[in-house]
Length: 214
Image: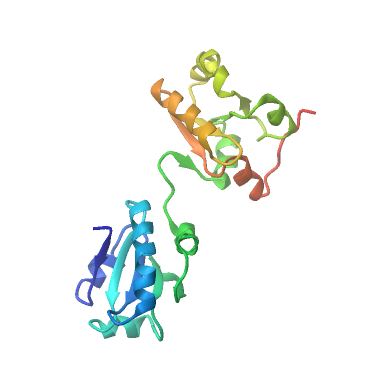
């Protein structure tokens, strides 16, 4: 079951001591808006399983918890990170808004690197950055020091990448299918690789410099 019911007795163990962020859904049986929100919360729980824990608290059965969260109206969603409330929302919100609520606190996927982490890796020369976009797009703007390897050129470039003996950071425009295809191909060849979260868009949104070849 993607959403677990917790009580005052189990709250510390299941929520405060959780190693990953927790989304707490405060609700009650009589609350029609709560029932409207519930399917959206369950969808988010399924999609983010392993990165986000989602629990429900019945405020009628657990008034101490309702009081602790100062839940003057429900439904109420609270994000708990490291045992502390980080953000909250009251009322019925969309699935996209629920994702926006929790995403800043999610742990990164094991096969991704954040844009803000990449400059330090580049400075220490610990990675090879591969831009998989079309050569003309690459020439207009790319991450400084990146190597242009579109998917149809990957086989020819594999020996060069392997010879560098460094993990490969792969990116396209925004972390899409092109980068994923190259990432998968590198993994099949046994070359360590990660994807740049958000791709070139993520890099530029952090305000980092770009290199232009024309």
